[in-house]
Image 1 (cartoon, rainbow, N blue to C red):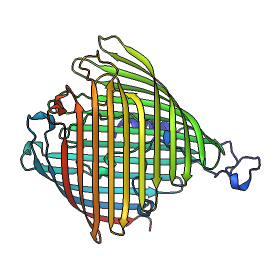
Image 2: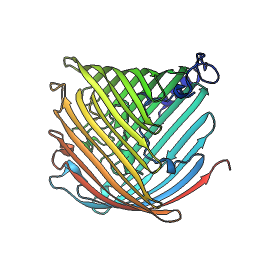
Image 3: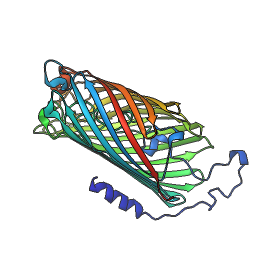
Image 4: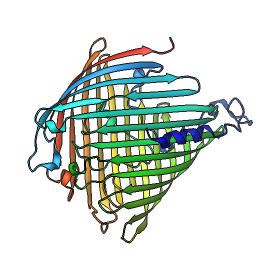
Length: 448
């Protein structure tokens, strides 16, 4: 975890907690019972900074300790991507121990997960790897109307497909996000860290304000594995106002500032953006929401010894999320300006993500997740600039609970990329992977 997240949390907890609404959460003026808002406002997806849930409500648990162990084998038809003139296939074997601790009290919800991984390859033994996956979420209610939250996720991996849950590798957000990775090198050492802190204050029965800070880092320890890609990092701050106009309808505005840095050889590129979005969210059902947001975005791109580039462009996001008893569905579309996450310069990005999970029967679960992104450069004159391209990633899984705490899963993933001039993926851009795994899960309730 980065020290910045600890500092942010300390600052959030130091904010005075006070409220300007009655203790029952309603205005002093009378409202018809059928139109009376609930005491606590929701934080709409365009401003809450969290991905949509991928777990149906029937599977949600709290206050538990979970221990797990997963054995997995996979066949990959292109393990070295663009590093060889001909695609090389290989079979890998992985083991994934894991621990998850979830604790909920009336004022605090905390979740900590840790899952290291160990993978060996039959033919490309030089790429044997040890992975790390750590995630932390803390939400603390300072008062009935002031909430602070902190999220931090760290991933160290040499294979983009080596993750405890591949469906979560394609998170669906309703808010603007800086993509930490654009071009995916399937088998390359990579370290990513994303941290977010947010403070919300419900100052009236129907009014809320909030502020947040986000940091991302992308680091390639071995640049020889990713020719054409470079380290990058971002920091962003935002503030929002949200108004509940009825039980189901929310409107508001969001301002976001971000600085994104890329570090090509003997140079540095910087992209500063200012974004103002008006948003609207309707909760069609308690667990079904539709969100729309749009507004202007200004960017200022600069690189060492190069003339800067500045311009305005429209920005927009839309998302739909549903968390049912046995099914979840989430989809989003975003049009933004970004640096490309591993590429240099400024890019116009159109992206779409979707995720679906079903509990088909008591012991059967299925899931589908996918993403598609198109990058187009706004700074073709920058040193080592790339014209852009597109990335498509998809995964399908089927899981069956065999007996007691044991379950089996099989799945298929496909990665397709098209970026001219990036040696890491130019020669063999497509990767297909089939996998099967056996897992053991043990859960113990806490406080009982």
